[in-house]
Structures are given as C-alpha cells and as structure tokens.
Image 1 (cartoon, helix red, strand yellow):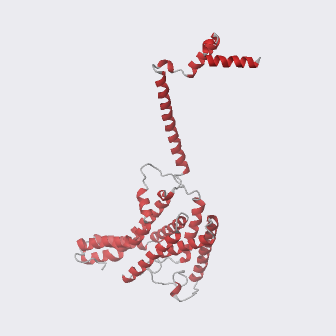
Image 2: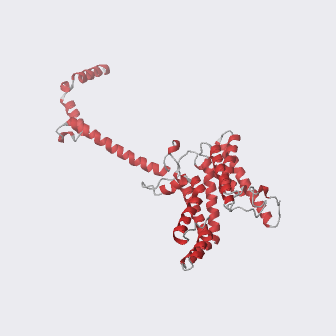
Image 3: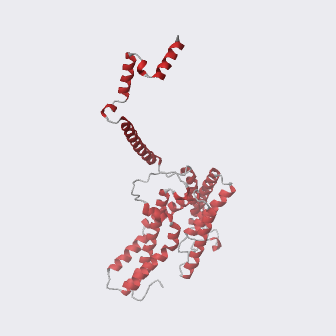
Length: 351
C-alpha cells in the first residue's frame, strides 16, 4: 500500500501538477503565495528574484560588517600578521615617554646653557630671567624627580615587553650598544660625558634577555619565568644594598664597576646614569608581562576612533631609538640657531 502511494506520488511529480486533484492544487498555490507574497506586485518575477537576492546579500554584508566592527572593538584590535601590524598601545606609550624625554632635555638646555648666555647678552630682556627661573625651578622640583623616575620605569617596562616581539634581540641589542658607545665618545669630547646612560642599560638588558632566551632554548614560557625571577631578584638586591649604603656602609672605592650599581661607587661622573641595578630588573619583569599579556600577539585595546588620534605618538614611538640618539643634537641646533640669529648674534653659545 505504502509503496503504491509512493510510486503514484513520484509519477505525479514527474508529469506535473495537472494530474493533482483540486485540493492539492489549492494547497500548493496557497503555499507558494505565502512563501513569496511580494511576487504578485512585480511585473518581472525573475528580476524580482535577482533584486531580492542582491538586496539581501547587501543587507547581510552590512550586518556582518557591523558585527565584525563591534567584535574587533571588544577583542582589542587586529592580530599581528608580519611586520606591517604593530601593537599600537606600545608605540603610543613609547612615543609619549620619548617626547617627555625630549621636553625634559629642552628644559635643561634652556635653564642651564642657553638662557644664561642670552641674559648676559641682553640684560634689557627681563622676560628671559623668568624663563630661566621657571626652567631651573622645574628641573629641581620634586615633581620633576618623581615623574622622571616613573617615565623611566614605564620606558624600561615597555622595552622588556618589546623583547617578546622582536625578531632578533641580538641584532637589536648590538645596535643599541653601538649607538651607546658613540654617545659616550661624542659626549666625552663635549665635556659632559655619558658613561652608562639609559641606552647603555637598554643594550645590556636586551642582550641579557637574548642570552636567557637562548639558554632556555626559545621556550617562551620558560624564558618569561626566568626573566621574572631574575628581575625580582635584581630589584630586591638593589633595595637591600641601597639601604646598607644609605646607612653608611661602603662596599668599594673602585669605580671600575660603576655600571653595576650606584651603591658600589657613589659620585661617578655621568650626565645620564642608569646602572644595571635596578633598571635592568624592570626590563626583565616587563618581558614577563609581554608573554603574559600578549601571548596571542594582539592589541589589548581598540584603536578608539577612525581618525587614529594616537598616530602622531605612535610615529615617535616607532623611531624611539633614533629620537634618543639624535634629539639632543636637534634641540641644541635649534637653540643655537636662535642664539646666532636673535639673542647672541655671531655666537652659537654651545660652542
């Protein structure tokens, strides 16, 4: 019975609906009208189908685009793919830090080098005295001292995070070391030598991280843990030794190891001085957080606007090394040009 009905149904489908009874015709017609209610008002059903599909696809794509944008906002940016993708918040933080450093050195040059010469050549310009007083007051203020330490700590922390992303920390560390040595040579000839400044410290820290990563056979978790433990050990040792030094203990009078820590030989002459203890500890701890926070190699924050308000800071952050190496030359050149053209004609002051 069932098989006969099935055969009859197949025969009706093969021959078309003319052989169906009136109830079946009405049922089929009603179903078609309910499924496609708009076709009756269109003169060309085929065109309506094409238009409906196109419009549906367009709406679907628009909805998908909105959903993707919302999802990207909550997940915090795009995943890194090659060198064309960067984690913007790291560039932003680095850019802010390096611009604050440039401002810091500008204030020093104004208050201690150029403005005093300008005042001597132009005693009638009383406003220059106010400029010098403000610059010196800012430089000697507690706010400047505290903020300088905070900026340096953040800079060290970000440098450590960047170790996790660098393709070759060996190359990066060697390049920083070469520039650091050039800075020492140039500043020694200018009479304001930098023996072991922040770039020297960064070079040492990056090469140390490369050594740790090599010994750990490039196992990122193992490298991160070792870096964290060593970084914390450096901070703890520095805290304990500094407390002993402040209490009157003197460990050595030999300045050969000046780059290790300030408590080994206080009073070492250096215009910019950031020894291994404790600064390298912050870099190593930062590298641990590089693994912890950026293991998926994705920005943690959305870009916050289609106009990329952070782009100018990102730019300076991407070229932070070059800014550090050449910013003093650029600042001094601009101030020297102002000197020879306006304040001290014929005298660049810095020479």
